[in-house]
Amino acid sequence: MSAGPRWAAEEEWLLEDLVGTDVFAVVYQRYRAIAKQNGWPERSKAALYYRSRLLGLRAVATDDNLNRYEVARQLGIQPHRVRTWVDRYPCLKSRKVGRCYRLSLADLRNFALKRPYLFWGVDEIGLANLIGETYAPHVLRKNHRKDTRRAVICVETGAVYPSLHQAARAFMRSDYERSRKGRSHVLAANIRSAALNPSLTAYGCHWRFVEELRASA
Image (cartoon, rainbow, N blue to C red; front, side):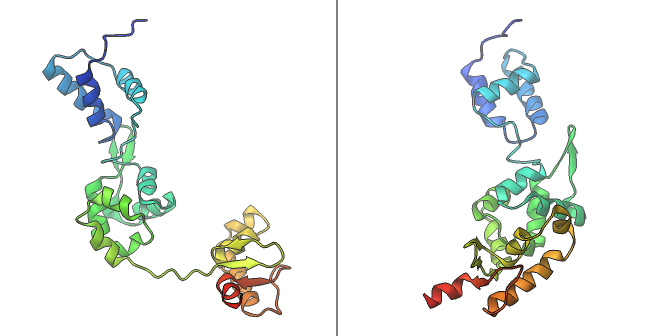
């Protein structure tokens, strides 16, 4: 099997400029057009992909037409939040690019400016990289929310949980119980009652709010 023509430095520089700007199928088409203009050897899609990997480049789009997981990764949030946005708001519908469905950064920018309150808790640098440094401050200024979570500690085990709901989910007995809608709210309310009243227990344990323990220490 022939290894093909040797890669020139100009070809690798072009790969570094193109890879990540869009899905790989689009990157391949752009590369072929520029290579044809410059008279470079014709490369297959597999050759471009493996050369990109050899150069340490990620074939996943990071500049435009991103998948939902890449958007979530850059924003520092869970993928289910992005999935909820796509399912609930028609202005952020995925578009088919090649064989996959992707999100346009232009649509994401307009969505963020129209509904900034949905972007609470996102990574500020990641948001600026996605929608632009000009628009990110406006979105962040509008979506600011006070963090009302209170960390709790289980006296018997010494385990600290950042919120009542996370403590509740840790004490659920099975996956079925975790999947029941509203179940964590019931457990969290019981733990909260025990944390407010030292004489009470919840699920066989005593609970305290971490901030109150630090204040009394």
